Image 1 (cartoon, rainbow, N blue to C red):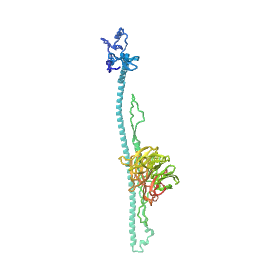
Image 2 (image 1 turned 30 degrees about the horizontal axis):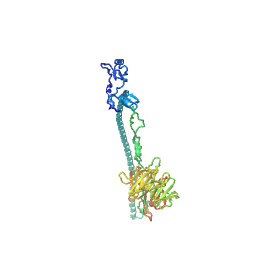
Image 3 (image 1 turned 90 degrees about the vertical axis):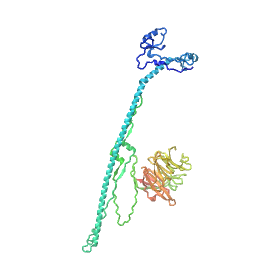
Image 4 (image 1 turned 180 degrees about the vertical axis):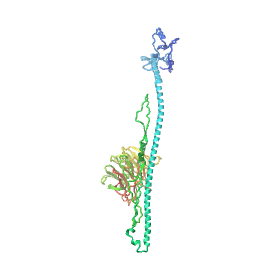
Length: 623
């Protein structure tokens, strides 16, 4: 059974227009108001016509109802299979509209329903929904949309106010910084004036003393030129009259020092203030959409004292003035003894770590041997006071700090190829099989691992590797999963050539000794290149590298020039965390020959291994 395409019924047009007060009776010639409706005739009726309609024999059984309860007239649609018949029923079993012939031919014993009744209910429901949309949903949505548009203006005004507050606070902070800087400069000027006056006074003392000496020379020449014996002052003078007054003692001025303030972006944020979203539950609009919660700018509270702490301050060192040296008369030497220059002091660590100033000299604490090695090329120290040391021939030996051998492993690797994890486990490189193992940890494929380090902060494994002319540093987690590859800088240039020693600083920087580049290459924990340190002057050959509690970087500079005499370049460079050279570790030169391995223990002592011996020497270099 097929249906023809439906057409829109004209019955919709019979509905009263919204706002119309009444509808006229549909009986011909009657102009009274419609109050009733005949569902069978689909005729509008006034009360009088309704009574006559129900009295008529032809229509007395018709269903007459109040007009609002009327049934909607079913649109007339012919059956496609039976063009003379109207579709007026719904087959409940097949859920299709049918005509009376369809019922007889194709839908015997099926259940049917009056299509007009169904249509009328759905029609009324649709009108109700249209009414709801027009009377409630659409006006409410328009009101909320207007409210949202007002919120746009409010947000813009609120953000403009915050921006203005931030700029005003920043200007206030800048002015305070300028004021503090100006006050510090005035203080410097006063100190300079005082020191100059003191030096001027000293200069005047020596000018007077020089005049005294010149007069004394003239006086002595007068004594020598006198020809009178009886009245000659040279003969009659007392011994103290011929005694020269000593040279006046003066002290060298101690200039003030500027201690730069230590601060971070977070410190400045605390002073300036920050923009935050209030911890307030957003209020719902009347029909559910959330109103935005405006951020607020909380201005920082600070004083001149806070700015001084960030900027730094000028202070007079608590040091006794040093007397100028007056050379003995018997000394003819004018040689000057060189001194080490220390450019930075009092590095500030995090709150839970104490500040350990650098010492002007390194003190030998003890020394111990690593048995069965011909040199100590690399050191891994764990918290149980046990040390793994290795030489260039693949001998890997564990010893205690008294030099007692505990274990020995024969490997095929060299230099910085082993590390100890936070749990005290040893991990080392087997270059032949290209794996990391006590038990197999990870295979590196075509890449040859040459250095390894276990992070003391999170247990990650950092590995320096090479493949042909390429080199990289790879990070693995504790389970051996590769999580980071560091190979090139932001310009696409290779960072490494031969990363044969590697360590991690406490700020997360990865520090690598690269023999071929003749440099220490440092990247941050994201792998971004921070700096490369090329040494001081020429001849920088970096070997073992480590860091300490103050974020210093210590690196061996060693080049064996004569294997028979075991001699060569022998310095240990100490850098700050930003790559600035501070000084050479002050170890007496006879004690240091070809250093190649370093590590720092829990007592902040540095353990130094050398190419020339199986002895490890421990130095204290922090006060």
